[in-house]
Structure formats: structure tokens, C-alpha cells
Length: 40
Length: 215
Image (cartoon, each protein chain N blue to C red):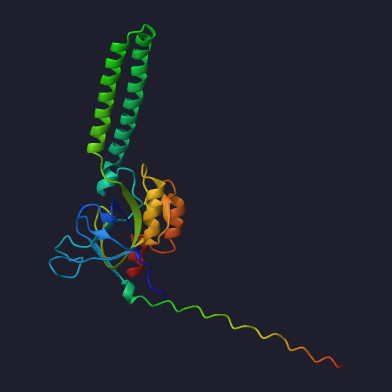
């Protein structure tokens, strides 16, 4: 590919330098409310 | 502070039997990710070398002369249209010439004209097939590592990841979808620029924004 002129330059972190995305934790199950024992 | 997004670039690939290859050097792109190397042995892209992964900074326009296949696209489309026109006109001329002969029972002249016309049209089609270029696709790449930008909007980078493929005019949908599926990237059609750019804006920054953030 033909290039024209002098280049500008920037540096973007390489893929192996990027912070890894932490896995999303599974939601903690909400305990069901305890049911009071029904007197017999 | 969040890590800067990669630089968004656009490029083309030729479709080979094994998948995508770069349009000029013929380097294979078996996966969506590619890292530049140089045969000389230094890290790529280097200042006094032509190594690196090339792209352009904006959505390629039809006939963009910074790309090899895309630059030839208008002529290719014109040639296909002319070929179609020649074939249709040839068949129409054949019918117009042969019908009166057949109606008068002049079978031999009708046959000779028919054979001559068929040979002529076959020659046109054969010539077109002989000079036919391979199929190509466009696509967006996310550039990272060392990224250089030249005055004509050409980018040269250390790493690239294909973000999506773009089906150019005249390339079969099924072919583009198959290539994109193999790479695990989405495919957009040439007329879906806005939709593609919305998708790409989540994954990369245009050069101007990336350069402003980097300074």
C-alpha cells in the first residue's frame, strides 16, 4: 500500500498488555424466606 | 482509567481456497488476529522498512486507490455490465436474424449464423473469465501496539484483529457469510455503512480520537 509523507505515531496497548476482563460472578441465590411452622 | 480502544482501520483481503490472504503480499489470515513480523528480524512496524499490517483510516469508497482490489472495482463492475449487455444483445441479434430465415425455411444460413454468434459470445465470456480477478472482501480491523498514520490516511500497525467483514458490491452473500463465520466475526453489506460504524464504535476509535487521547 502506498504511503505518503512522514508518519505520526501512537502506541495503543497490545492485546497481551490489556487488562483481562474478569469473569462475571454468578449471582448469589437469594434464600427463600423461612416459613413459620404451622401449629398442628 | 479505562485502557484506550484500538485504532479502527479498514482493509481488504483476497479470497483464496484456504480463506483470506492479504491482497498484495498474499500472507494468509487464518484467524481474526494477526501480528506483524518482518523477514529482516526486527520488530514490526519499523521506521525504515515497509513491514507492518496495513489499513486505511476510513470506510473505503468505491474505487479507493489506496486499496488494490477496491481500486479495480469500478472497472470490474463496468466490465461485468458490458459483458452482460453483449451477451443479451448477441442473443437478441441472433433471434432477429434467424427468425426470418427459419420462417422461409433457410435452415443452413440460420444454422451458420447461430453457430458463428454462439462462438463469438463464448469467446467474449472466455476472455472475461481469463482476466477475472479473484473475489475479495473488505473489513474493519482493530489496530494496537505501535500504530503509524501517513498523510494519505494509510495506517501501519503492529497488531490487528478483524472486527467485521464488509461484503463489497458484486461479491456473493454466501461467500462473505461463510468467511465471516469461519473467523467468528459479523459481516455487513457494502450499503450498511451506518450500521457497521455503530457496531465498530464500541470496539475501536478512529485515528483522530485515538491520537487525541494518546497525547
